[in-house]
Amino acid sequence: MDRNQLLGYYTSRPLVVSIAAKLQEPVANHLQIGGLAGSADAIILAAVTSLTTNSHLVILNDREEAAYFLNNIENLLANNHPLFFPSSYKRTFQLDDSDNASILSRAEVLSRLNKSSSVIVVTYPEAITEKLLREKIWSKILITSCRRKIIDQIS
Image (cartoon, rainbow, N blue to C red; front, top):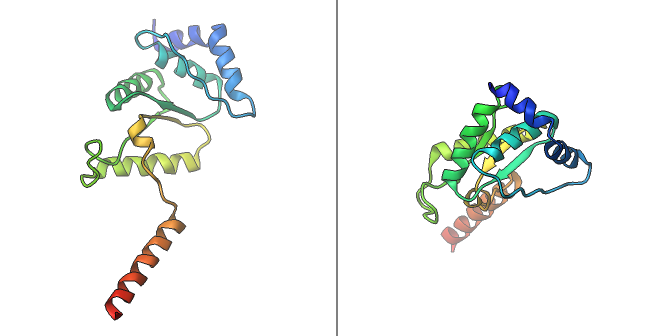
């Protein structure tokens, strides 16, 4: 059985059809599905994405579980490439040790979310709890910081 047959089987299942219908409603819906074994979660998401045009955010327990799930989704979906939203830091709670590749990956995900209406983002709690500053806010912080330095130098 190839992946198209597998996804075709799941897209016709009543549970998957009802999940897709719920996600297509104009009111924002949050779903949590439990009790699945193996790669069933990835298969169900792949089937749901073939029935919907929405973006999907998948939050898993940790980085390793998210990477494993991402690999499963990438293998199931040939033309819809999911995105990984990692933490900016190499190790949790070591805020002075940032990872440039992860920062670039985060920027790519945010850029794709702004441009596209149908994106799958896979992440984990540590990554989504990091603050993201808007450019206007960041420029205000920089201007305030520069003003304080100038005032300190004058005093």
